[in-house]
Image (cartoon, rainbow, N blue to C red; front, side, top):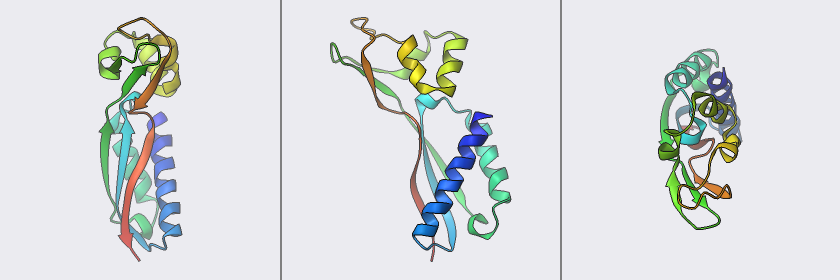
Length: 137
């Protein structure tokens, strides 16, 4: 599942970052998930929990905080800015699923709602990132 792979990648990156900072344990990981990623948050949280159980002492008592970043898009032709949540209502289930796995597919299924141009950029709410890590040295 997509969510399991993301959870594993986030935890691997967090452990690597903690090791670079010489942290013996990690007490908190804040994760930002772009709305465009369309993660099933319950599955992602479950995956994090299960993977953490197998990680040993470094992540033993870690708290994960997940925040969703709203996705916005901006037309390069007319400058109009709109939200992915508005656009999502117009997508078919297949289109939505394609964007879930490959967010760049949004460029195939989307046009500016103001001028109809297919030339736009995603200005926020894309991808998954670690925004902070707390731990003990």
